[in-house]
Amino acid sequence: MTIQEEQQEIIADFEYLLNWDDKYEYIIQLGKELPLIDSRYKTEDNLIRGCQSRVWLHADFLDGKLSFTADSDAIITKGLVSLVIKVLSGHTPKEIVDAEITFIEAIGLSSHLSPTRSNGLLSMLKQIKLYALAYQAKSVHS
Amino acid sequence: MHDTTTISDPALNIEHLRKDFPILDQTIYGSPLVYLDNAATTQKPEAVLKAMDDYYHTINSNVHRGVHYLSQRATEAYEGSRQKIADFINARHNHEIIFTRGTTEAINLVAASFGKKFLQAGDSILVSAVEHHSNIVPWQLICEEKGATLRVIPVDDNGELILHDLHRLLEGVKLVAFNYVSNSLGIINPVKHIISTAHSYNIPVLLDAAQAVQHMEVDVQDLDVDFLAFSSHKLYGPTGIGVLYGKEEWLNQLPPYQGGGEMIKTVTFEKTTYNDLPYKFEAGTPDMAGAIGLGAAIDYILGLGIRNVRQAEHNLMTYALDTLQDVQGIRFIGKADSANRAGVISFLVGDIHPFDLGEILDKQGIAVRTGHHCAQPVMDRYCIPGTVRASLAVYNNREDVDRLAAGIRKAAKLLLG
Ligand SMILES: Cc1ncc(COP(=O)(O)O)c(C=O)c1O
Image (cartoon, rainbow over all chains, first blue to last red; front, side, top):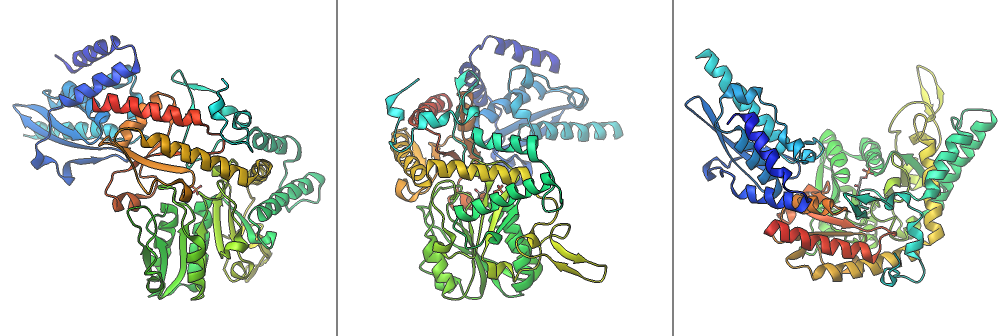
């Protein structure tokens, strides 16, 4: 699936969840499916500091594709992180750099992207783009 | 909705008083608003909004400058507010009241001006372990500049300051700065004891009263405190204005903080002479509407009676601690005792991240604060990432507390699965 298709699928899934509590229950459930970061990568270097909750992120580059593992100390953030990784993992650096992440807003959780909230999700998205840019630059030069 | 259980105090009719705060009457995501973030800022009664509106509609004009009618009216109103504040905290003189932008600016003023004149390399400033960043960082800045050090009164597991070593801690200290009530834990500190101990060594004391003046009587002469700071916006008044009280003998010794209009007597390029108190510390056009709004807020509180406010809030605090105690997995930060507590309840539930809990409460229309509350050293002391903080004002009722307890239960069910 393309990044766009992955996002469409998530948006469609959430359309069935009419109440906010159902939505959150689902997000929390997704948090449990997050590909957890190996404890040896759960370091200060891989810590993305939000003011409120913390996110750890690790990137692997294999066969031209990036994949991510992560963790967060807040369970709602963890659920959203899990969704972001589901959407972006397994794609090429170029696809990730070019991707526009629209699903978070579409499922009604845009407050998590507000810089005032600074809960780590926004910084994590930026970090993923930075990794992708770095690998894209590398593959162009090599 | 007239639930008899919500009328908790005979002296104040809370249901009636809530109508003075129009903002409370709204729904958030479909639920009636429960506003429990009062330690961050309180809502404003109609009387405050009207006073500010009237000011702009009828007498707006620059103060202390004009010969004309409006300027004189504006000056009277502005100075009238200063007098109200002086009376409110029982200052000896109204020129001991300096208008600032808030608590933060008041503390920065003293740190900079006192530090410039009195602080030398090797000296110390003493603060407590439960301070807001506003009462830490200004001191760090001046200490760094002067080669002085910041010393800290430790706190115990109950959130109470450990004072048996106070005499030793005071050695070489030039000023003690601490809060009356901690914004992260809500514990009322033994202010008189600390002030008199500091005074026995002729060390002046600055009291951060940002979380005190809205909850209890504060009398600067009775406390014998040298400096005291608070913010209007936590006292039902407008944002952007606050107060520094200083004893006349101290304020006269301090150099000005900022230069500009209003604070000078004569200016030549060779030499400027400064104005008298309080204008020496009020450079530039002040926040006139803000000062007048704060005056109206004080009138409002005095109208309710500050003792009645204290009593009503104390009753609600007792009810809140009792009610929340029954929530499974709840853990209060600081001793859960209403006698020594004002306004604030900080807690955690199980191992739920405060941010998650705050978000699910928000979805139920309940406004609380989550995080470190600008008091990171306090969180480090208890080895926690932050807390959920519910903070009360005079307009909160038992229904608010019940909604909070139910909201936490619902959140816990959702988050713990
Ligand atoms: C104890 C304490 N001190 C200082 C401050 C800072 O007040 P302001 O931001 O109004 O200057 C606050 C407000 O959060 C506070 O609670």
